[in-house]
Image (cartoon, rainbow, N blue to C red; front, side, top):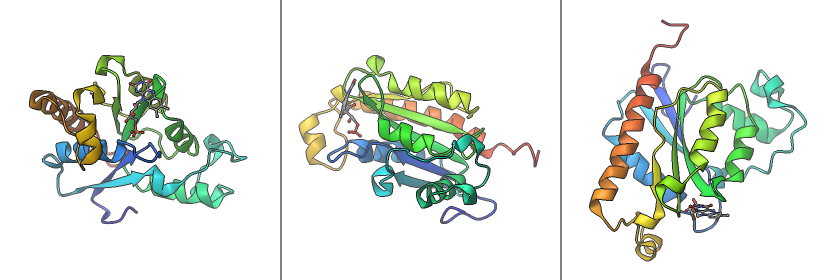
Length: 210
Ligand SMILES: Cc1cc2nc3c(=O)[nH]c(=O)nc-3n(C[C@H](O)[C@H](O)[C@H](O)COP(=O)(O)O)c2cc1C
């Protein structure tokens, strides 16, 4: 069970998936956390999972995760720990960086480690990258995969363009620095709207208890 979670609370994992030094991922995650905080019920816990802390190797397991029904059945400690962590959450917010017109390999590998742990759960994607928002494709590519896992997704995927930010000030500070406050407001509103939909999925009674 995720830390701070009781049998009645729900846990949402916000996954920072880039692992390179100097990444924007944590700052993007902070913006998302701030944007959803005002609509975070007391019985919903948000936990940041940073893949940099996990240091997962590229997937080299012998099992096909599809066939593994319980965390105990994975052959490696890495898979067992990752399975237990992901299983302990009821929903996920994926921070998806744009790398070469798609999402980062670190995210694909971390996702590929598991299968049943992700299935049918609510999820939300926030895609960010250097190019204008309408030129970011990683969120859509990743969304296609989550759809196959029958994960419950909001209608829209927020896309955040770093071209709307002052890169020098952003690099120097702890926050993203937007040139235009209206753009920042719109970004936060897009994230809030996607979260509102995700939250409905999180709080919906599970089929077993309905
Ligand atoms: C390997 C690599 C490829 C990238 N390719 C693109 C791209 O195709 N389109 C884009 O908009 N930004 C691209 N970028 C810029 C990243 O989206 C941007 O630096 C973002 O902050 C990456 O996330 P991170 O800082 O959390 O690693 C690329 C960055 C890297 C490191």
